Structures are given as structure tokens and as C-alpha cells.
Image 1: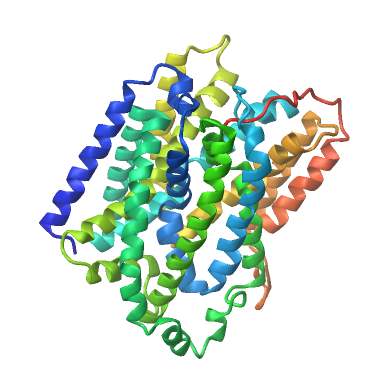
Image 2: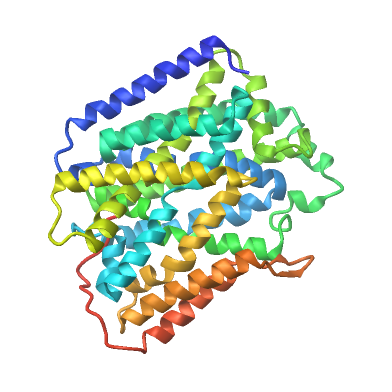
Length: 473
């Protein structure tokens, strides 16, 4: 549905983004400048990179799909819960993280539970950073905009993301995130009033879904187990490396806190817009693939040239998330996996940066191999976030917040129980009842992870953990 003019605008934007990455590549001299932008991010860049990184294709296109299926409950259960839990992160946890200690999430695991647990956590964290849902979203956008094979477009976006990540490091990522943040907000909100009015607003949506009143109910649109799963996933932010990295890269602790509180307002309003847009898709295109139908619907309402801005906004959201996690995942591979297993002495900054860039490339390959196996964007997102929470959430949270005894067995048993139970209930799903739905694996794996952490904490000697050290990623 895009014209030659639209494609020209997109090409020039791609060239500009790569130019920004090349410009900031000149300032990369060590891991501090590559990974944390010399801890110099101002409030404006922190806001832009947090909003853009949090949304991505999952937050924009994926929310459309979930709202089209589950209705108003998507906003009330997922959006409000996901953003409300960020208040404590901004007010209390974030300032602690800004302590200038050179450690990562696996470093915290290492200090609390030992090297073996740190390596295991690093592997799962690396997998989490592949962000499969973002690549899944590229397929729907590409099919709607150009009618191209989703794999080909996925390859293009991944290559562009890797180039941007490897060139500019965090500063290049943050600056381009700010640009993508503008395009994302503008493009999605610009067309919303028109498509909302096309179905008669909320009154029209209620009338069209009168046979299914749960669709417009705040909480009745999804099964109990699905709602419980989303509520649990809300707290994943406390073990999500991107937020810790942004806080640590802020020029002051106050900057990170103010940026997070600013983002809360933007997130909540923007989620309301995307949720309503998904409900409009449900009314106008019943039975259609919702994410694909949304992109086609929006493009049909926009004039030539402006369509390109919408597509740039969507792809910008995807790239801004992917480059953030590729940066973190690459560093995890270099510093927390390779260095712990193979390095006999401390690696030089040059080697760490090069290994981090290699890690970003590996993440891109993993994403392309797995992303298009999922039907909905949120399916890919939920799978990865559930796997990471099942294995890493309890050990990380207890290492940071619990001042009592921690042992090597606590970390190992917690991660093992969470991973095995998640795999079991994913491969052998259990249906509780029609109203409750299928048992979501994380509803079992997360409590089991905590129970086995408590059991493991009573086995063996207490491991040393320096409370003055906090995580940076």
C-alpha cells in the first residue's frame, strides 16, 4: 500500500539513523562509553529511550492484537498494572541502582549464589534479550505495507538494528530512540481520532459487541488464569535489564527518577489509545488477523507521504527496543558468559566491546529463527518474559532486597525449579475449567521458584554478598 514517495522517505530516514550511529561510534573508547554512554544521559534522552524501548512492536502492534481479542480488560489489567508497579522502581529502587558500581545482573547473582548460578542466569538473560515479539511484529507490518515475505523484512530490520547497536552504543541508541519516540507517538495518535469516529466511538463499539458484553468490561474480557498471568508479568520490570541500565546511565539519580515518573503518564495515555484502536479493529474486521488488519486500516486512512511516517513510527518502535536489548544481551555474552567461563584474566575493553557486538549478531540470528513461529506478537512476548521470570526473577529480587542468609543452593534450586516447571506446563498444558481457562505455566513456576529458593537457603554455607554493590544493567 506504500507508494514510491513513501519508500523514498523511509530510505532517507534509514540513512539518517545509520549516520547518527556512525557519528557516535567515534566517541566509543571503552565499555563505559559503549554500554553506559559515560553515565551522561539527560532527562530528555532518558524519557525518550525509556518510552521507545518499553513499547516496541509488542507495545504498539502487540497491544492492538491483545485488545482486539480481550477488549477493555487489556488496558485495565495489563496496562494499569504494568505501569503502576513502576512507581516504587522510580522512587526507591532506581536511586539505589544509580550507585556507580561496575556490576551487572549476573554479577549480583554471582555475589549472592556463586559462579555456576551466575552463568545459568546469564544464559537465560541472553535468551530474554532476543526479544522475539519485536521481530514477529515486523512480519505483520511488512505484509500490510509492502506485501513482502515476513522473513525477508525481518532480516532487514535485524541487520539495521545490529548495525545501529554496534556503531553507536548506548548514546547512539538513546538519540535514535528519541527520534523514534516522536514518530511513534505522532503516527499512532495522528490517525486514532479518525478510526475511532469511523465506528461511532465507544457507543458504537458497545453496540457492535452487544452480544459479548465482556468485551467492553474492565476485567471480564479474559480468563482468570490469563489475567493472573498478566498481573504477575507486570512485576518483571524489577528484573528487566533495560530499566536498570537506563537508571545507571542517567547523569544523576534524580534524573532517572524524574524520567520514570514522566514516562508513567505517557505510557498510560498511549496504552489507552492503542487499546481503543484494537477494539476498533475487532469491530471493523471480525475474524481477521488483528495486527495485520490494524496496519492495513491505518494506511488506508492516510495520504501519500504521511503513510511513510506511520511505518517509520512502527519500525522505529521495534528497532528502539531491539537495539536496547541487543546492546544488553551482547554485553551479557561478553562479560557474563564468555569472561566467566573461558577468560583466565580480565578482558580488555576493546575485546569486551567486540565480543558484545558479536553477541548482538547472535541474538539477531536467534530471533530470526524463532520469532515467526508465534501467531500473535504478544504470544512471543509472553513466552520470553515468562521464561525469564520463572528462572531469574526470584533469585535477582531476593539478592537485592533480602538481607538474610543466601546460599549457592538457593540460587540453583530456584532457577532449576522455575525452569523445569515452566517447560513442563508449557509442553503439557492443563485446562482448569472453561471460565478459568488453561493454567498459565508462570502461575506454577514462579511460586515454585520462590519455594525452592527458601528450601535452598537452608542448605549449605552462606555466600558473601556486598550490599554496597548494586546492578547497572
